[in-house]
Every structure is written in structure tokens, then in C-alpha cells.
Image (cartoon, rainbow over all chains, first blue to last red; front, side):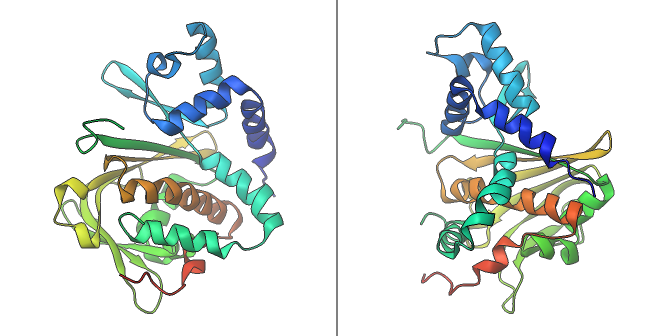
Amino acid sequence: MTRREPKDADLVFKALADPTRRELLDRLFERNGRTLGELCEGLDMARQSATQHIGVLEAANLVSARKRGREKLHFINPVPLHEIYERWVRKFEGARLETLADIKRVLEGDGR
Amino acid sequence: MNAHASQSKASFVYVTYILSTPQKVFDAIVKPEIARLYWGHENVSDWKPGSKWEHVRVGDKRTVELVGKVLEISPPHRLVISWANESQKDDPEKTSRVTFEVEGHRDMVKLTVIHDELEAGGGMEKGIRMGWPMVLAGLKSLLETGNGVVMFTLLETPAKAG
């Protein structure tokens, strides 16, 4: 059986095991699709160090980068987090239909 | 929060790597009999450029929840569709765009879903931010293990009041 999960999950957990990288993800969650410069605004961090952190997040597939003209925009990618959620959280909590029903409401209506 | 909120558009990029082939991944999006297994919805169209597509909930009522047009299609690598709530299909402000890119990546497939032209802060943005990670995790699970995580069929609770 092919299980790629262990290696992929390692990268995700490693990427998340750093407060700066979590801060970068929070910033992208607030506003997605930012350049490196925008992302680091107000952060006390050298550009080189920011580039390295983003690299770790990209390797874990938590951030994806797209070119737009001459700019490189960074997007948060929560899909691996969802896979980990499925593997490590949902398994232990059973069916949470209330939450799902909320999601349904949001998906179906425009607004709440 | 900002003065030009009504004007601004939001974009999201979702990526997943799937142990599969580009053709299987592409089929999982456009073939109703596969999409229903992990999405709980079917994407129904003849998949010709300019054709209509409908996002149909699996179930007795077969509610059409989303509609749009096929803007661009080149199987098995690229599909671009417009995307709107059925009830808002005539409002260009509420119409967004979804691009699927399917690339072979060593023994895996890199699937990128770009959802842009979204009304920032709108209901659709909120919905897709929760929806796409579930859908893509379900798709990956189905193609890699044969088990779809059919989130949306668990949701057959009484429909919203309005």
C-alpha cells in the first residue's frame, strides 16, 4: 500500500513548529495573495530569513506561489491541514454534524 | 475595514498532490459518476467551450446549486469555468472564476485550483474557503485509497428556511 502521508505530514508539522511561520500563515489567512514584501511588512525580519521561512512553507505545500506579471504572489493552501485534520482530529471526535450543517448553510446561502 | 471593499476581488489558490494520473484527476472533476463519490455533487456539462455547466447536489431533488460556463477546456490538463450561485447567476459582480490545472509531477499529479474574481468578503468567499480544502482532500482520498470522504452527503439535513 502506498502511504505518502508520513513524509508529507512530517513537512507540515515541521513547518508549523515555528512561531514566525505560523505568523506568516496567519497573515496570509487575513489577506491572501501577497508579495514577499507585503507579507513581511511590519515584521522584524531580514528578507533572506523571510524567504527561507516561505520556502519551508512551500515545501510543506502550505503556501503556493503564483506569478502575476513581474510579481510573485503567495497564497495560503490549507489542503494539507485538512488532510491532517481528517487523519488526526476527525478520527477521534466522531461525526460533527452540527459543524457540517453550518458549513452547508454557508455554502448554500450567500451570507449566513 | 476598507473603503473600497465592494470593489475588491479575492483570489485563492489550492494545491494538492495526488498519487494518480492526470486523466483520472481530470475525469474526477468532469464526470458526474466520479464527482458524486467525493464531492456529493456532480458537475454536469457537455464540456465544450462556451457550454453551460451545473453543479448539482446528489440526492432526490438534484438541486442545481451553482451554474456557469465552460470558459476554456483542454483535457486532461486545464479547465476554466465561471462560477455563480444559481440564484445570482445574472449578477456579474457575484460571478467568479475557477481554474483547474492538472500537471504530472514525477509519479504524482499536482492539482491546482485557482478561484478568483470573487467578491471579497462575500458569502461565496466564505463558502469556498471551507469547501475547497474538503473537496480536494476528498478527491485525493478517493483516488489514492478508493474511499471518498463524501462530506456533502452527510449534510442532507433540512434545507435552509429561506
